[in-house]
Length: 133
Image 1: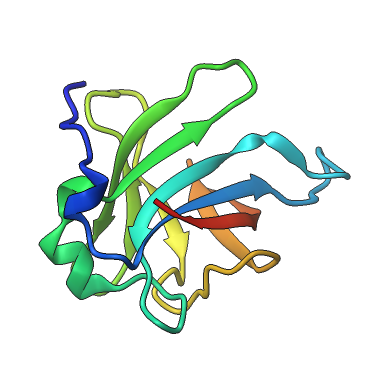
Image 2 (image 1 turned 60 degrees about the horizontal axis):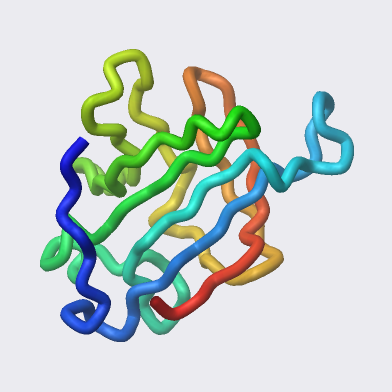
């Protein structure tokens, strides 16, 4: 996959690096910091994803899917018609888009929880950190 490098100086100040880690669930009673995502996205003042800034800087809105096997997939944060946010992995034929559950309404602040639909199964992730680029 050929992603253009992100030039941090060219992005608005509201761009953040958001780290999501798997929260507690039956197969992971303590959660799992080796299962997660790193999302680069613009956040509005209310800590929600800013769709207008996303529209202006789509190429910079990226996601890295972190898994324990070290085979991390890289893709983009995509805003679909109707307001759904998905993670789309360019060039990964067997990896379907993963939809954030009500991402338009979610606040991305440490300690909050968000849900992601992965291959038809909903998983809950904890916002571990939110940092300026």
